[in-house]
Image (cartoon, rainbow, N blue to C red; front, side, top):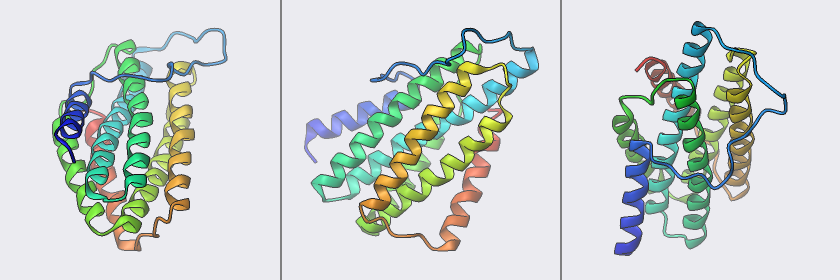
Length: 208
């Protein structure tokens, strides 16, 4: 990797952790004309869910960056880079939604980022098939996680719902692309460990 590429990746990581993200697509909007006013409890719950989603996107940036660094395939480097750019839209959308809900990102974002960077690089060192399989399984678990958010978001919070629905569609596409590219199915113990780690992260990020 060239010096310019390292600087670019460092800049992306810094922006991910500090919340200075650029979107290439506009913020998803609800088709409804207007959303009802949220109660204080509804705003707090929606903010907690969006904070969890924002953490997920911080981790996604780290995962794709590390897998991009680990592979020697130019095609996979481009695929991971494209996925990271689309996930950066999610990062910007969730940050914007948090501001609208008068809330903030997780205070532990640097920790989440560092952990995901290490995990992604480790997955990449097992080879491209394992790396793609890890990507596919991660996106499937995120899809399941977003399904739960769509069930529990306040019905009146149409703005957050529109963001989550578009994120879900993108994650499904990323999982399919990784599987189609030759991603290997991960062993059950690995999938279970990923789910357990995700639960710890989501429960913590909801509050902190």
